[in-house]
Length: 233
Ligand SMILES: NC(=O)c1ccc[n+]([C@@H]2O[C@H](COP(=O)([O-])OP(=O)(O)OC[C@H]3O[C@@H](n4cnc5c(N)ncnc54)[C@H](OP(=O)(O)O)[C@@H]3O)[C@@H](O)[C@H]2O)c1
Image (cartoon, rainbow, N blue to C red; front, side):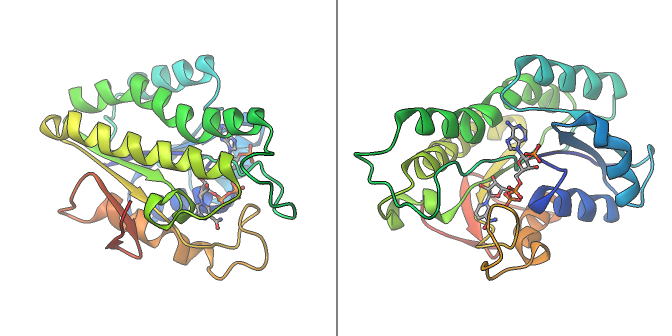
């Protein structure tokens, strides 16, 4: 049985990713911040403990990351896929702050969740992934982190996703030979709490490329994808 860890799996794109991976026969670890809601979530997924397990995982908390590492190693099923989906968009959408006006704390907090979260998770789990035969890492990034298409405003979100993309490329260079494939995905503009009602895509459309990268037999590494097609950094 293939295994996957999805962060931010309680709602939005993370929930849909976990749901579809379970339907495809994966054992899925659902990283969620509010573990009290774990049983409810498993019920909502119409699954059971043979196919899914909720793990308390705030990606900014070292103790949660260590806890996730312990649970995954103890279960001893290997780890084939990590989907770093948990993310925040902290800048108010109504006010387009200039990069000169933004509170630097917003930038630091965005990077703490969107970039340092995945980095710390990989430091804890990629050695185990390598030990158990390699695997795939999927960083849920955004077109707002594309340097080649960079616009103004929302510097915290944009910088955090640019840095996440850098992490994709670095990890891919360093660990391809260990059987680790790493890619970034832009899900498009998706109707979730983050994307809002005006978004153009459903969650099902939003996870298509992620599911493809998790399940397709032969995939490249060190690339950025939208709609299963490579896009520029
Ligand atoms: N929706 C879009 O249009 C869009 C476009 C491009 C990229 N993306 C990216 O797609 C990913 C998922 O976004 P979404 O639209 O599904 O957003 P969402 O509905 O706002 O969900 C965000 C998820 O991240 C979790 N999260 C936030 N901070 C966390 C932390 N410190 N530790 C662990 N989990 C944390 C949330 O958990 P809680 O419920 O506990 O808060 C929630 O599960 C994000 O990385 C986002 O940047 C989204």
